[in-house]
Length: 111
Length: 111
Image: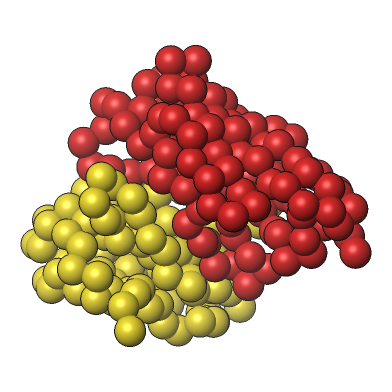
């Protein structure tokens, strides 16, 4: 079954903790993306990767880190430096002509 | 950077009615996509439409790239059409394929 999976679906973090959100795709796409969505808002780009072992900062990268060791995987770490991490996080991968397909998302809440 | 504006911000319809959603963008684009975000947060691809007109069932979209706008038409609306509709563009100057999202139109279809 092809697609993009994200885990966990819900995540709770204590102040000062780092947490890692998983994103996996089996669509054989080269490009992968992480977006953040706040209530009532559109999506904003955190990081993106066009190829394995390479990634670039998006518009709101501060307090986040990523890695791209495998084509299928693009995990996002929300560090303690991120001042307001409570949000809905969406991962996407890029298809032909830059069409993007999204995973189901992870809702992160800071306790 | 490029600005993406969607209108109206909110729309309430009676089941069976038709509607038109608009997306204006401030610069030339390589790519324009329309998405539907369902109540569970999943972003569903509706159209990849950098120019021209496409139809898929009760939905159709038109992008006039030279005038920098796109329209999404929903005919004979159903309660399952409820949710938030996003327009997203990839600016022509951008090499990474990243999408810039509008703020969305929240549609509520009443039975």
